[in-house]
Length: 438
Image 1 (cartoon, rainbow, N blue to C red):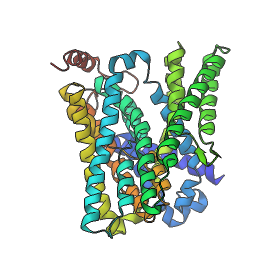
Image 2 (cartoon, rainbow, N blue to C red):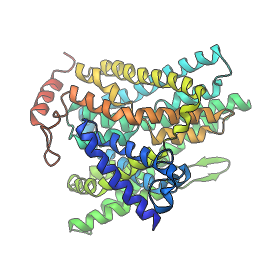
Image 3 (cartoon, helix red, strand yellow):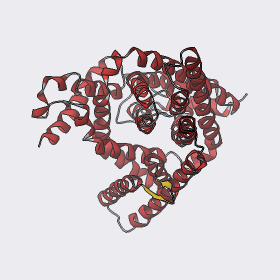
Image 4 (cartoon, helix red, strand yellow):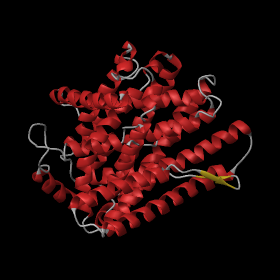
């Protein structure tokens, strides 16, 4: 009973807060996160009202609803997979791959260099192993916040299309960078070199995720053909996404080698394959988007409730976190700028894409949880928590501003949630895209 009351209050609180955010010209995502903070254990939750289902008395209480967050991430990844249509990839697939890889690597290099210099200045602040691990975590971008901003404002145009592809690729690259960096970090601490941990296991995880996602996507297409009503096709699609999420959580070990899957990659691949083989996938995806709207609101409210404000009282975390945030931001901006210049993207995309890649959340937190096994792994976790607190509250608003500056969002008050975005902006960008590189 209490769980149902908590879920309903999270939904109502998030939606009511979005009305205030609208008056301040802030994205709804920011409103949901603030609502979560207010309902969390450091605000309303501290009043002891959680016994009546109002707010969360502890971070453990928020964690008990993690299944909702996992489900939301699965649907977000499935939706992003829909962007990998063959015609889309023909237009900008090569650019997205180059930008996705280069900006992630550049960001890792920037944060690694800054934190290693910090270590040289004062070795007691942070170890080398934690420094290089944080550098790899810095590469990860949160797809959820980006997708929600794009959806809310009906953003459309070359930069939006490139952004969604880059965010998807970014997670695969981030996974590889983290696995390699964390493997090296463990070698530095133990003195034992393990090529299995550094190279083999990350490759296995990506390959298995792609294979599983493809298999489920094909199975979904095969079963969808037996149903003709829209409601039944919607129901079977949702069931398969839930199945994909469940299967991606499987882990096992054979001969000392750990086998696992990436939830984001599996669900993304499932959506990619399904949308490319199914001729009615686009209409179906629109119906799924409508069904998942409350789920995404819950996801962000719970994400806000999970933000640990206690870390703000730790000077060590604030120093390392400040360096991490500054150099990650610089890495994302200049990494995207340079890679866009290398692929001859338009000046508008070069200037604004990097800002839209700043949001960071679930993927980074998952990596930080793994990194807790390091000797000072608690430092890694707390720095990532601080960065998530900053980027999740500031990132969506910056993403919105960048998309407006790029001409891919109609200014507030001139668009309706029920209609597509401004066609004039689309015509402008189509013309600009044809002139790219001139």
